[in-house]
Structures are given as C-alpha cells and as structure tokens.
Image (cartoon, rainbow, N blue to C red; front, side):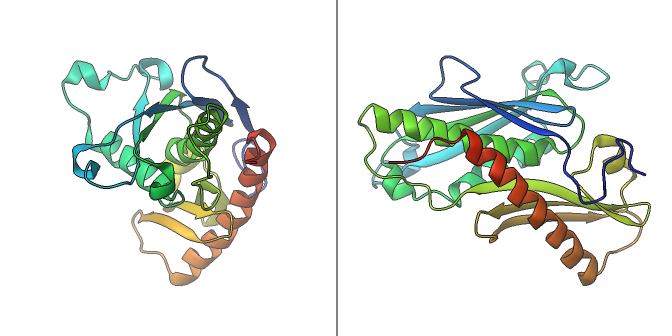
Length: 240
C-alpha cells in the first residue's frame, strides 16, 4: 500500500492552471499531489552574447524553492550569496529539456526564460517543473503570435517528465517525498509526445539496478507521461 493509497502505476492528482500570473507572457500553476510550482515564461527581444552573430533564439531556465516550501525553512539562494549545486543542476535540466523540443531558428533572435518557483515541495519538483514550463512556454509563444511577432510555431514536439523508482522492492510511478526518501532506485524521465527520450536520470541506493529494472521503469514512466500530455493538451492553446 502506498502512502496516499495510489496504485503503483498511478500518477498523483495532477492539475495545471493556465494564465496564473498577470504580467509574464506565459504562466501556469502546476500541482502534482502536494507539490505545487509556479512556472512563468518571460520574453526578451535579444539573445546572449554567444548567439548575437547568428539568427537563433535561446531558451533558459531558473529554478528555486521558496522558504516555506519545505517543512523547515529553506534559505533563499540570494541570502547565501550563491546558487547551490542542486539548484544549478535542476535549472540546467529544465533549460536543455525545453531547448530539445524547440527549433531555435524559428524562435528568432529572442530569449525566453522559464522561471520555476516551488511554493510547496513533496517530491518530483524537477519533473513537475519541466511539465509546467512546457505549458508556460506554449502560452508565451501564443502571446507572441497574437502580437504578430511570430509567424511559425517553433515547437517540434510536446514535452513532459515524471519520476519512477523502486521502493521496498516494488516499481512505483511519480514518487512523493516519503517514497523518494525510501527508494532503492530513483529515476527521472523526460520524454516527448512521440515517446522519444530527452533525458534519463537514475540513481541507486545501496545496490545497483538492472537493465530490466530500467526497462520496467521506463515503460511505467512512458504511460504516466502520456497522461501528463493529455492534461497539458486541455490547457494549451492550439497553434493556428
């Protein structure tokens, strides 16, 4: 029996609320069980220095956890004077995941920054951030289209992510924090709408895992991602 009485292959209750913040070109609140993240997409009509001689755009991401997002207060990165290693790793993952499904030439010479702010954490924050950021990006692109600043959809494929792992010897999908803390194997899968893989992260605790374990978890994650894609479809504006 799982902590929240889900089946092993069942996602946590998922909700995506679009247009959540007034000012950014795109914004959503995504909730996966008790994990809640605000994802915003902001457009800047310029690119980083290393891209200024070309015609490509850029997509980048920032990730952070608010002080009240965890049981004990989490200090802000700004108060520490630096971004910690975990935060850097996650925001790089979000950025390269989104870039994998966008034609940066079609985006044009502009930068879209995805800000993913965790307001409540209960496991799976990086995967939920990727799934939410994709919807925020879609909103931003629709905003550009309505303004007449973008004529062609640069998105090549839909994108979502989910965790899966082995807990007490059982394969489980979409781990909450308590399951994640007990997991013998913890994996994160980032996949496209066609089922292609953008990134897999996997870690074993105590004992190595097998190729069969990876295949089983990937199959479970793929089915879960299909459900997330359906939830995204309900709030994503169609491109015309």
